[in-house]
Image 1: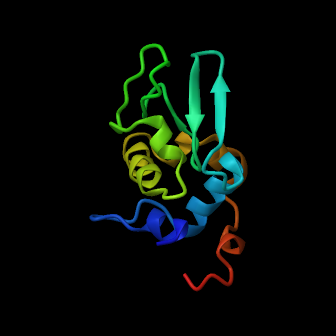
Image 2 (image 1 turned 90 degrees about the vertical axis):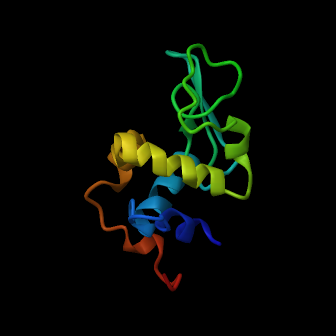
Image 3 (image 1 turned 45 degrees about the vertical axis):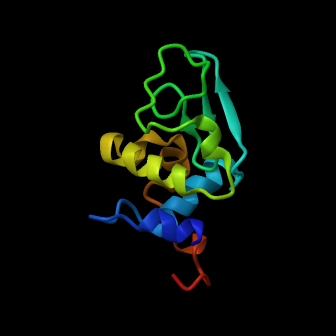
Length: 122
C-alpha cells in the first residue's frame, strides 16, 4: 500500500486528505523515511517521513522525560514500511490535530494541495 493510501485509511474516519498527508511528508522530510532532526531545546529528536517527535510520541531511549504515547520505538518510524509512522500520525492528529506539524502550518494550510496527488489515481 502506498504512503498516500495509508494516510487516508482509518477504521472509523478519514483523519486528513491524501494530498495533505503527502504535503506534510514532503515538507517535513522530503519523503525521506530515514530523516531525523534534533531539537536542542528539549533534547528530543523528530524521526522518519513524518518527523514524529521522541519527547511525546516514540521512544528513542535518550530523550529526557519522554512519554512514548504511540508505544513505538523511534527507529521503527524510520523504515520504508511506514505503517507504524502512519499509525502514530493518526494518534497525533486525534490528540493534537494536524497543526502539530510545522510543515502543515508553513506549507500546507490554506493551500491548493491537488498537485501533490495529481496523476496518482487517488
